[in-house]
Length: 73
Image (tube, rainbow, N blue to C red):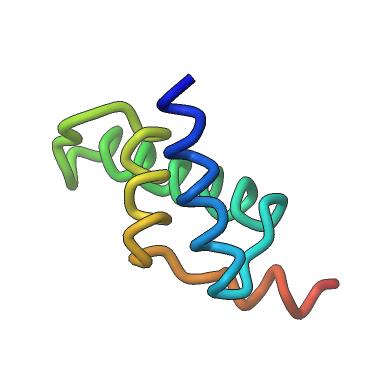
């Protein structure tokens, strides 16, 4: 249960930055797809699974929202 509490704290931090939980899921999925594509092309050698890396980057603030997706809404 302790891991779940940590995730709640991180989600709260994202919400403070204006990223709700649903937007965070979409952003993490897009980043994971990007990481996976780069790994397949041999551009990067991932240290962990693409989803884990994407979530870590999202919580660190290294993932930005896709502006194209915003303009389609």
